[in-house]
Structures are given as structure tokens and as C-alpha cells.
Length: 271
Image (cartoon, rainbow, N blue to C red):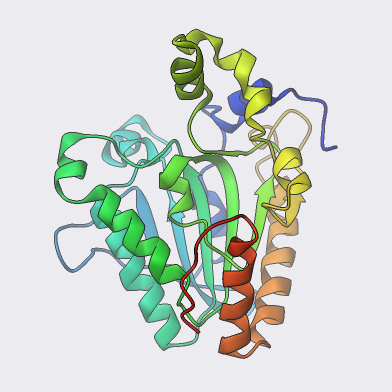
């Protein structure tokens, strides 16, 4: 068990206004990070930050959901809720990573995919579905880290991976506790009551085998000490990247597809 916080307290810590975003991790672990923008179709989505960076001498494609730190950034980034062009940018970058045999690092932090009319009209569901299907065919290692909020399809879209790490006070769930309470009890104010039932904490997900490892935070949350998880993350990310790079592409894909078949998910054989 990591810490003594209840599930609802961990939801609050994952959403804390001062909790670091993916930018801190990227610029600390990969100071040479070069951002690549746009989906080559419609626009650039600032809720998805993607590019190339080196972590401990391993060149990786790093793709993150970024909420922003200032109010201006949060508004521009839609508070970390990607549009379809964001997910199509991810598809462009993971194909590029495969072409150059670069491992992929996903950093998950979103309440969910953007639910607005404009996103739906540009094919939000199709973009997420196409990305999910693509990730089962990409012949290069994929590592994912749930940094804070891992909400709904917006998080799952970049959650298909060969190894998944999760920060101690992060959450990962099919929808928000407020949404769960509204559907089940017609009362969103019961969110704090249903959070435990949702099994959305790192401890819960590790116990179910959904994630592979929990990264400890400072007492009181990541915002108390920004750098506590970063050393452990660097070590684990590079260890797993080097290990996964030893696998031949066929074995890598077979293992990835088998992982998700264990959850009862239909995965078309693309090896």
C-alpha cells in the first residue's frame, strides 16, 4: 500500500492546481527535447505535446497530454483535453518513431478527450479508435506513465503500452467520479462516495495487473516536492526501454497484444 490517502483524496491530489504537468518531466529528463507540431491535416493541438528527446542516452519519441501551468496555457490546452487533431498528431509521431526504431514514451494526464461540438464534428471517436488500433501494430517499444489524471478514452488513447508506470497519487478510470455518480445515482455530489468503488488508484490497478509499477511521491503529493518521482522515473523508463529494445518486433507485438487480450479486449492479430 502506498500512503494512507483514500481514493477520493487521491483524486484531489491528482487534480491539485499546483501538481506538476508533463512539461516538468520532459524538460528535466530530456533537456534536448525538440517539439514537433501539427497533424498534417487540420491543426496543432496544444493539449498534446510530442517530439524527440534523449533520456539517459536513449533517443525516444515523447508524447504527453499537457494541461498547462498558467491560466492562459490551460485555456489554450483545453485543460489537457485533446481534440481529434491531437490524436492524429500522435499517430503521425508514433509512425515516425517506428520508422526510426525509437522507443515511445507516453505521459498521461487528462480528464478525458475534449467533449465539445467541434471535436465531435471532426471525428473525435474515430481518431481515438484509429489510434488504439494503430498502437497494437507499432513495432517499437512503448512505455506509458500515468502522471496525474487518467480519464476515460482520452487517457486510454495513449495508454496502450508494453509497460505502464503510475505515480502514487495518480488515478486511472473509465470516467470521472462525478460522472460515475451522476450515471449510477443521478447525483454528481456523491463523487467522494463512489471513488473507492471505482478502483481507480495506483494500488487498485496494480493489484488487478492493469499497471506494472507504482512510483512513490513525496508525502502529501507530487506538488510538495516536484523532483521526488523524477529520478525513479528516469531509471525505470530507461531500464524498460533497453530491455524492450532487445526483443524482436514479432515478439514485442505478440506480448503487447496478449497483454490486452487478458483483459477481454479483442485485438486483431497484426504480427
